Image (spheres, rainbow, N blue to C red):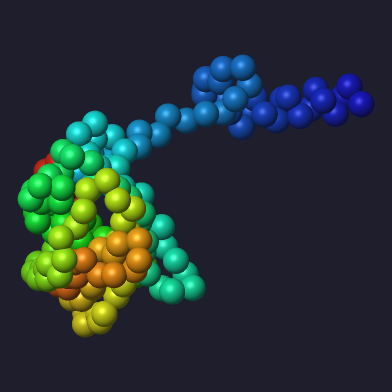
Length: 171
């Protein structure tokens, strides 16, 4: 038995020759890119930190949230720019289904009813159509009763992230 353990240790030493290990763990440092997105980024202290989940049954992304007073537009209601921002982010998430990085090219927003602050809300988004690099998606912000408060449609164009963001990569 002792002979087997000794042989195993020698094999491990050979495989990991020249590599440093602390307490027997083979951990490698992998630098994760921070997510500073204003809407969904966990690394943005000023951001909204919204969390989107994919509903496979309904083929859509869903996020439940409440908006605080910092997002005020008209008294007691959300600013239109924030509404557009949430809808844009929700539509952008849909591109993950096809494993593409796509940027917003065009977007329309229909403000149907005022979006209240401090109330339970949800945003849902889904794919409408894909033609080559063009991805057309839609999203809605709904109140607790399921009434649509705002609706959008957007054109997203798939890009090569390595080319587009190369100048921002840390070397």
